[in-house]
Amino acid sequence: MSKVVVFDHPLIQHKLAIMRDKNTGVKEFRELLEEISMLMIFEVTRDLETEEVEVETPITTCKCRKLAGRKLAVVPILRAGLGMVDGVINMVPAAKVGHIGLYRDPETLEPVEYYCKLPADCTEREIVVVDPMLATGGSASAAIRFIKQRGCSHIRLVNLIAAPEGVQRMQEDHPDVDIFIAALDDHLNEHGYIVPGLGDAGDRLFGTK
Ligand code: PRP
Ligand code: URA
Image 1 (cartoon, helix red, strand yellow):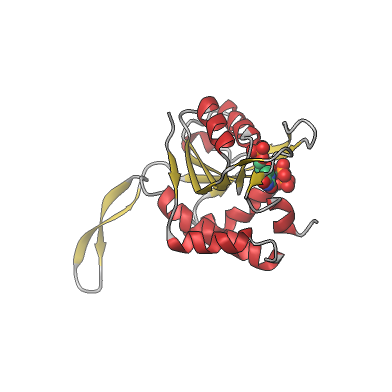
Image 2 (cartoon, protein in one colour):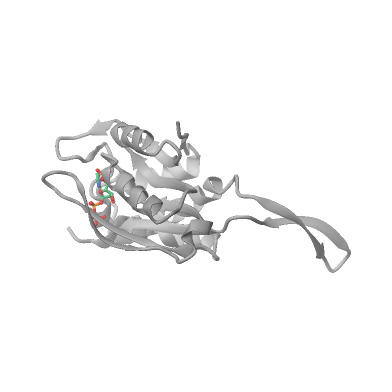
C-alpha cells in the first residue's frame, strides 16, 4: 500500500486557504501555486540519496553531502499541472520536464489522452507527477499508467487537494506510488468536483472562465 503524506505546515495551509477563496484572482492563484509547490517538493524529496564529497572551503577541507543516485524528472498533467513545474524547478534546477496531456470528459469523467512526451532517459529518473487536483483519480491513474508503459518504475505523485475517492483509486491502481498532498478534502460532488476544493484549477490558473 502506498503512503499518503498530508502537509499540514502552517505556511502551506495559509497559502492554500487563499487559493481556495473564490475572490482570489489569476495572478495571486498562480503565484501561490508556485510557492506551495516549492514548499512541497522540499519534503517530497526528503528521501533522495546523497553521497559524501570532500569540499575545499576558503578555510579548510571538509566532508559534505551532495545528491547522488537517480535524478529527477517532473511530469505535469496538462493543463493545471503546469502551474506546479516552476516551483519544483526552482528547487531542483537539474530536473528534466516531461508532459502528459489529459482532459476529463465532462460526461463520463474519464481521462482522454492527447499528448505524452517524456525525457529520453526517464527510466533512469525519479518521476514526480504533479497536478493540483486529485478528484476521481482517473487522470492521475491514467498518466501514471502511461509513464509505467514507457518503462519508468520510480514514481511519486504530488497534488494540492485530493478527494478520498481519488486517493482510494490511486492506491488500488498504483500501490507502489506514494502520494503527497496539502489537503484531503471531504468528497466529490455530482459533477466530479472536489468539495470544498477550489473549483476548476485549470480555469483559475489560466483565467479561462
Ligand atoms: C483537472 C485536474 C486533474 C483532473 C482531476 O484537469 O487538473 O487533471 O481534473 O480530475 P480526476 O481526478 O477526476 O481525473 P481537467 O480535466 O479539468 O483539465 P485541465 O487541467 O486541462 O483544465
Ligand atoms: N478538477 C478540478 O480542476 N477541480 C476539481 O475539483 C476536480 C477536478
